[in-house]
Image (tube, rainbow, N blue to C red; front, side, top):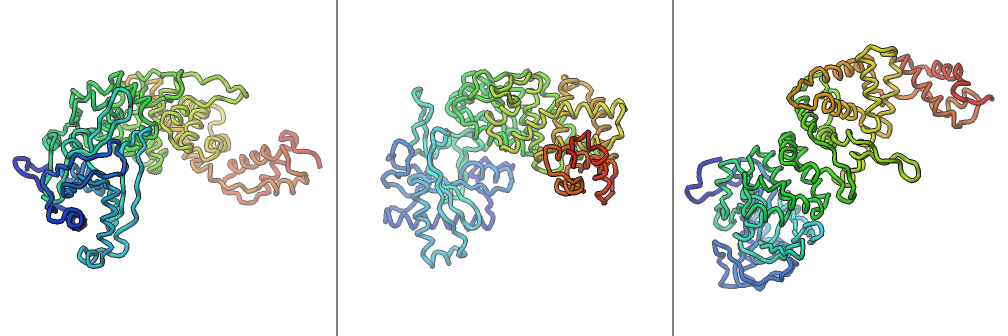
Length: 548
């Protein structure tokens, strides 16, 4: 970051950003001329009138001051850090986002204005407004308009006042200073005034960027109590930018009062959104280190709706996530990570699943009243605590249910037990693990990480011997050529078997088909189905195939 804080800070805009700035400033002047006439010169400080509706609804205050537009938050931060950013939030001093966008559309509907700003027919999209939802901690509506291919958010400057009687703030029109003070971190509280072309810093965000430190604009305890999600947001930004967190703030991030509110006040969907952004970033390991070191595990990875949700001991959790980091950092062709993590989705699932590994040490819940197995605790935390996708929850359930089977086959290879070269045994097991598309490779990785946490609970210990066992297991699967077992196409189907055996399909069919498929694994490359059918004929009684 350039050392330019001794005086006013300007930013170099891209051609597209300059086009957007010129368009918005011209639109503001046009609106002011209509509403204020001669009083249409925007004040540099942008202090608005005192009118407000008291609850953050869409009504704008009476117009006595000219419009002042600012780009806020992340875009300014990224510009100062020299990073590319397309996340442009526009803050408005005396008008709601929806009201401004409607007037902006009036401006661009005038043909000469479109021509003046070089707007193509598709450069201005439709208005989309996200309504307030205080129950989800969404305290102000946001209006979005696609301009020149970018989604631009528009919202008015505001101040928020919290009371003891309500978890939701009173939201009012505010000044730029008040808007900056309510934000999660000083580096996200910077503004770029579109009219002056200068950065506005009311809370010391520029200096904090230079020092690479995350600090809250207001008292950190009050900041976190007002919106506990800010705890996770600070962790996300600290890991993303490799910044430190102000010790005064860090000391309060695990305060019981804050964590209690994080569990009950913030929707789990929003918790999951923050976690997803952390774990999809290349520096996911830093986020988990923060969560672990600050003692936030049980506030994040739990089901708050279940009062008696068990709490795993997380002393060995570090071994699991540090192992995943090690595997990712040292991957080579044919390594554990390269064989098991093959897509970006798989990478994200790998980091998300390691957060749930501590639950494997706990016993399963008793069966349900109907006698069915209860969902694994890790799956309960994923579904109820994180509101993760059904695909991920199904994967976690399969990873838990199949872990012992995976470990048993690993032991067969490690100890060179009988049947170690039985290709059908390994191929059929992999297909069973992968039934319903449950990502068998990641299930194996889950077993690896849990095994490391159990056998080498001290992350400073030597996990190489454990990993060597798993590498040997995977090398054996490659040698047997069963890594793609789930995609092996059957030579025979149920109708073919039924016709060949002269009996109707029935309960016998599945076992017979599995026997035919196992024959395929033992006879790779054979394309004639007759051998598979003959295998079923020979085992007719064993498989329960009825007589003709």
